[in-house]
Length: 300
Image (cartoon, rainbow, N blue to C red; front, side, top):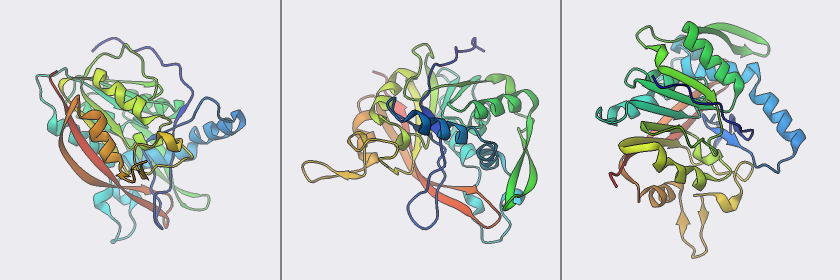
């Protein structure tokens, strides 16, 4: 296990729960990024929200909730559960063991993907902006379990427990706060990098994408998931990488731009749509679809 990475000095990337298109909403795993000239009072209120117990409980439920705790009805989409674990499975599926046995989970939230990655990788680094989330990750790392609750109705709640499977070596993990758009230069290289539902909530997605070749070792795997919900609330429109018509009248999608930016350093080896589910209350829940792309770092 390499020595711990220094904490990052950043104040602008936050996870949030976002409404997806349509009548049903979709929570995002991704961190919301805010520009440095944003209104300070507004940022304080948002920071307080993202550090709230309510949001922490929702993420613990999303990452570690058992089916009986989350689904009360036969017609609920059970196959949409365990999205973070399924993201990690994609990483492990394509990883080749001769590469650096290190994994980076950018925007790890409360850590389910990171813990799952530790089944295969000797060292896993999870980075997230929220101190509350990182605190939860470290409790789970140290004790293997953490109490939380899910809302049934109003202020009525149901107690639950997040548990890390006993066969996962928790000593392989390190968690720290950090900014996805301002990662340190001393992280080193990884055999696998995961960025789950992050890119459409950054103030400058291209800057983040241009950083990736230096993080993924030659032959390594990069997994990016996104529902491509571009919103000016989070990303200035001139920074969108998809969801618009360009000056030549051509449609530009997020997937198009990923291929354009990453293509010189990565080979696209697979892609698929992955559904995910968030429980809010016993009767209000959220369902979304993320596009998962798997890339292999070229040897050049």
